[in-house]
Length: 275
Ligand SMILES: [Zn+2]
Ligand SMILES: [Zn+2]
Image (cartoon, rainbow, N blue to C red):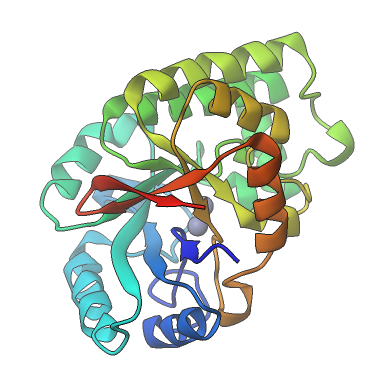
């Protein structure tokens, strides 16, 4: 098994287990490099969003201190201090000003909300967001536009679950990934990613979600490989049992696409693990 997990949660946000419990499980399952990346929202985002299970700035320092302290009991693990930031285009300046103040190893940018409601909370929230944007096509265009903006901002190391917008699109219920418009939209976003140097993750949670697909879709991974974009591997693990969930599928995907190294970050600097 590949011994790296760069995207995990704890009970500091919406995870079910403590830092220590997650690290014990990671060690037992043979991980060597393990990042804790709880959800984080800046002040305005906290006000705006209906998603409340997040680290806030008031407890960001205690959260980072707790990771450092708990990691001392696991010398065989490289434990990385991270956050999964909720990216909102309108709060970019605040995100920049906030992140600058803290000593982090890795920062993931994710878009879960465009409205105050988190569109990945259920199909009804997804549909509400789509309706607010003028339909599914306008929604995914806005979504990928924000992903591109997050990449170009230079504030983040990794794009989290790049095509989360397909979450409830099982059997292409809302749109087809083969549509010329969707392909064009994704390609425009990938251009921003390529130019920015940001990494993109394989997010193993996708296979367990309603879409039951890898994040990002295979055809997007082939384009990422062609563009030589750095790839990271994250379980998006929320409890001790899911730390290595779907890793077999992820390894098969990496092999199929021909990716031979994974990126990880220490003090926001790139390192590589050959696989
Ligand atoms: Zn996420
Ligand atoms: Zn996550």
